[in-house]
Length: 295
Image (cartoon, rainbow, N blue to C red; front, side, top):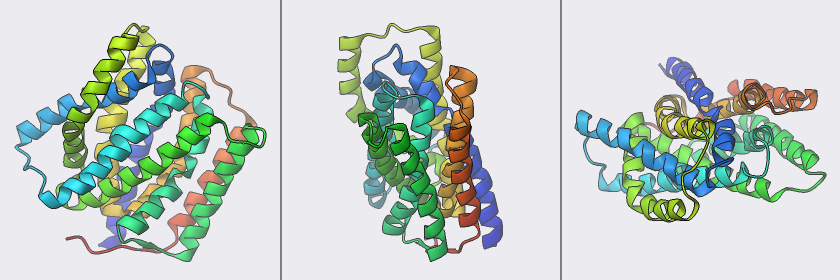
């Protein structure tokens, strides 16, 4: 029942987006006291602990040889690239600004799904996705007085790597299972993460306020771990390109969260841009997307 799968995928996808909506505000709180590398790599190392326990308790089978390359791309995208680049950016721009720039992520995810996952979105889908992304770029240029801030470049790099990690993870989840994908990615990444994390801790220390540790705990346990359970499941059963467009809702949720928890400014212009971007997801939702059959 394709329609039922698509609807269920959107429900799971929305739960993932809701979990990720606090990622930038929580990261901004954490990097106020902690080094960005400590936050970015530390969140993954901490998340790897419950991930390893789940794999052991469930006696999950080891990844097949064919799954190792996709898992490596998941690690590069959502374990290393996205956390590091967003943590660096949050040292320099408000979470509200970062939320709007990351609004281009759904388009990048759809492109990755087409290039790596064999999905074939229709022309109408691409028009809606491009319209939403154009609004995001226009907002970033407007906020930067006609030019991109260095933090914007970090955020755009996070978009490219995050999209790759989402597309590969969503595709792999169709055969491996959603929670197994993120759990194995976290565990397999540990040898890569621990040495630079130890060096960064030795250089910058771990002295931080309770608020910073609370933000760190959120990005480690929710953004880097639990949020991926419904997110990858939604991408797997509803399609990476289509469910990925739900990320267009994330800027609005992050704007509200940044205003509520960080006291950042929430202007009518921000809300207008967010609402316009959100409107594109409703249009793209009605456009057909061809998907390859699951193995």
